[in-house]
Amino acid sequence: MPHQQRDRAPQRKDQIMSKKIGFVGLGTMGLPMAVNLNKAGFEVIGYDAFEGSREKARAAGVTVAETLKEVAEKSDDAIVSMVRDYAQNVEVILGDDGLLSANPKDVTIIVMSTLDPDTMNELGAQVEEKGNVKLIAAAVSGGATGAQAGTLSIMASGAEDVVTAARPYFDAVGSNTFYYGSKPGNSQAAKLVNNLVLGINMNAVAEGLKFGAQYNLPEAELLNLFKVSTGDSWVARNWDSVSEWTAETALAVLLKDLKAAHLKGLEHNVAMPFNALSSTLLFDSMGQEKPQAK
Figure 1 (tube, one colour):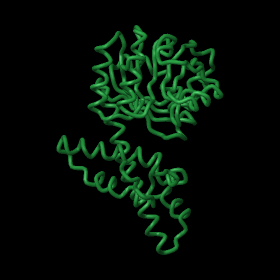
Figure 2 (tube, helix red, strand yellow):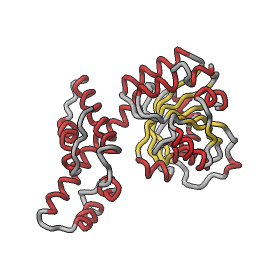
Figure 3 (cartoon, helix red, strand yellow):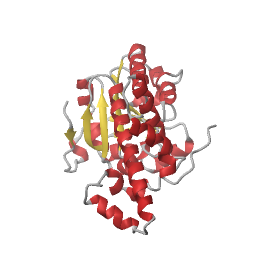
């Protein structure tokens, strides 16, 4: 399945067969994605472990289930997992009270979390061994602003026919869908590649602005220069929001991905010195202190 860009013409709700789609993880990214699925005409059956997140989802018009089992029972053919990490996905999907405890049939679980490529493959194998379900991965890029606007980039992998069948869901939350082959972990590898480039670019823009400040060059004008010259990048064009990333939120997530890419590079003997340097200097370049390890 080649890269496809969503038709920007708005879809009417009556143009889509109303389906119930499960959605687990209604946080900063998950909630706006669930809302956009609702807007596209799907009925979202949402769940989050935190009551505060469930309350926000209800206020946004999302139908909230009381248990994961209820999500699985009410979903027609797909359930999205947008929780934080591998351990949470295992608990949500394979736990004693997880999605598979409902013994769903002919359901696709779409993992949109960012995981390590190998653990994603392992999760896919475990899930498909346990029940009559299929699993595909669909990591996303675009941050909270992209989730809210419905313009995420989606890196999908898994059985091609299953990924193709999930396209209406991807179109509801994103502008571009890319297909990376049959292994679920390939989606996660693509996300690491993207964030590796992001991390390097963030260091470059931050370092350039720091140098310019020594000569009292207006930051806004430097950013305007980048946007129309060879210094252009997504980071430069979105510096207003990127510069607000904190050590407790997006910077910590990015650092996790840079480290994961570095470790995979060592494992496969792929030299990535710029990634290693960027992960080491990320917090300093962004003018923040690295959180102390707990």
